[in-house]
Image (tube, rainbow, N blue to C red; front, side, top):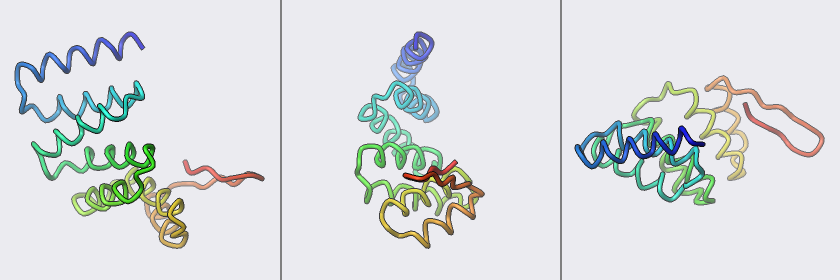
Amino acid sequence: LGRLKEAEVSFRQTIALKSDYVEAHYNLGVILQELERLKEAETSYRKAIALKPDYAGAYNNLGIILEELDRLNEAEACYKKALSIDPTQKKTLVGYGNLLLKLNKHLDGLKFIDEGQGVIVFTESSFKII
């Protein structure tokens, strides 16, 4: 936790010196996401996207956050945008597939999970995608 806070301070200092540094905004988002400060992470990813509209990784991570915030339609739009930029990202394919399962779009969800080489683990009470 201490190292994450130090990293946060470093990225904020970098942004203060160079506000258009895309990677600093993205990496700050990653740190804030790890710290479970999702609204702040959302802001950082959106800033990275504003600076670099074709940043697939930022769209993917924003999708993850929006999904965690139960803003599923927005999350779906982010995953779709990420895949339109880079359709080969396995993490995005699996994440989008998982979201589609939550949206009761099971066949589509399974297709994306398979395409991303994800694994579904079934238990008696639920399933987990890894």
